[in-house]
Length: 113
Length: 113
Image (cartoon, rainbow over all chains, first blue to last red; front, side, top):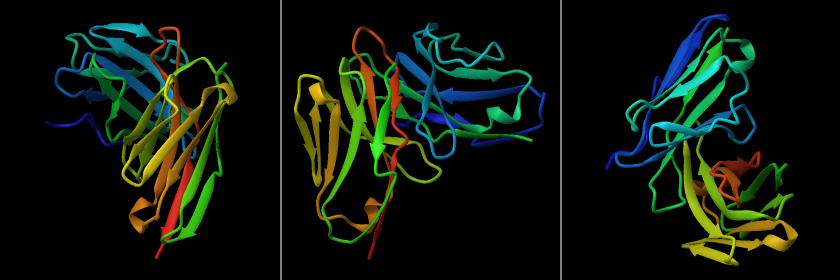
């Protein structure tokens, strides 16, 4: 079946604006993760959903970042009052309940001017 | 706090060489360790997953070993090919019910004909 998809693939915004990044996980995967990857670095964990609830949001850098997964499938990462330091690739991953392997999407490249 | 380090940061080799990529982690209380491949502008693809109770895993020309007590893992690539050119990332999942992956910064591999 289809893999993890993320939209948009690229997003350019101005400092101070609000952005939403979308993740469509693999059908049936109950676990969903958001990571952020800066240039030359490995991905850094942001938030983990099990079903509809955020089971671990310890990686969110501050209260400008928020994520939802209202029906237990699609998730949206929301960033308010964007700053230039938010520029990065935002990766989404999903996992079924019966395996440890996380399947990653292609990412959304966010550029804040 | 768990930290993951990968050495070398970059590697350029001629086709046909056997390679060893290194990964070290500071806290031996891990649940599993994964090696991923990332192509430019793409998401991550899981290559091998080693559970904490295992010593190694093999897939085709790839072999990953794990020495949990010393906090080390190696990824061995046999008979390298230009198509192996990518960034290789290792990630650990902590034991104790934590679901997030902690990544190293990766090794950028270039295999030239």
